[in-house]
Image (cartoon, rainbow, N blue to C red):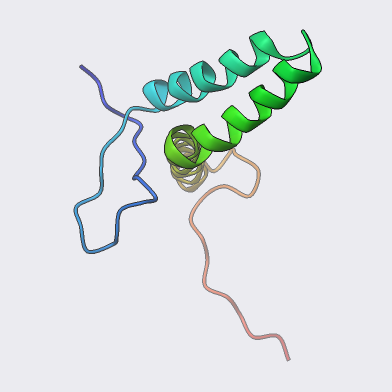
Length: 101
């Protein structure tokens, strides 16, 4: 099973080993938690209120970590691509800053 690109769990401290996660799994978990509310949303005011409350709760206990992990993985991929590909806008190696006087 391929486990890259990866992110780390934001709830873990820097002293611990990073938790390796799969980007596809992170995005699927976010989608599943948001989809439940979207399916119920708009049917009634009571359903709308319940959907928002569920989103807030599950953000704190579940999908927020997966969302943050997915964003870190995507950011890492973009940074890697930019540093390796000089055809990317502003790509290529970062040069030393020069003091302009």
